[in-house]
Image (cartoon, rainbow, N blue to C red; front, top):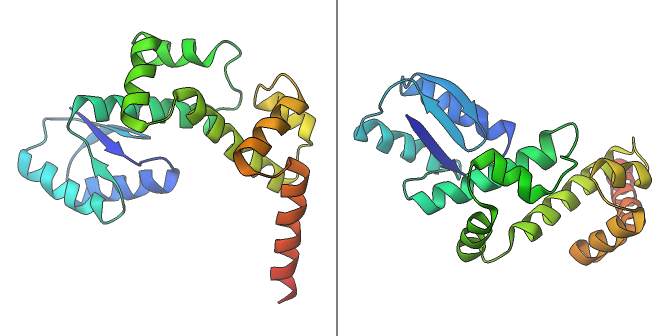
Length: 186
């Protein structure tokens, strides 16, 4: 039985869900972002208990098909951008469609209808979050970050970064370093 969980987007969320499953003695064989594959059918009572526990941590057990599909789309994108070593070289639309087994137009229309933004904007927002993270680590230069995130050029990354954050990547990095230094001086 598959259990879909909204807002389960990090390793910390996975730990919360794992602990809740163990506390309720719900056996599972797979625990991924947004999805738990239970070994057996879960009773209505246990599902309600799990939902009650998860809600305390801002996580929600999903039931309706559209919400489940949206969470699947979000999980594929988050996994792809934040946790994969390398982003797919072909179109994101083909990648998402292939991963979920649905026509991309259907996925895109459903996502836009429910979330109010396009899948493309959701991907861009997550790519910029990843770029911010990589800038803070200070291990890669902007050219390497642009390459890692599949941007055609540093200028393309910089333009999207500024559009999303209001800051250039270099100004963002300087600002974060200045804040960090100010905190260390206290």
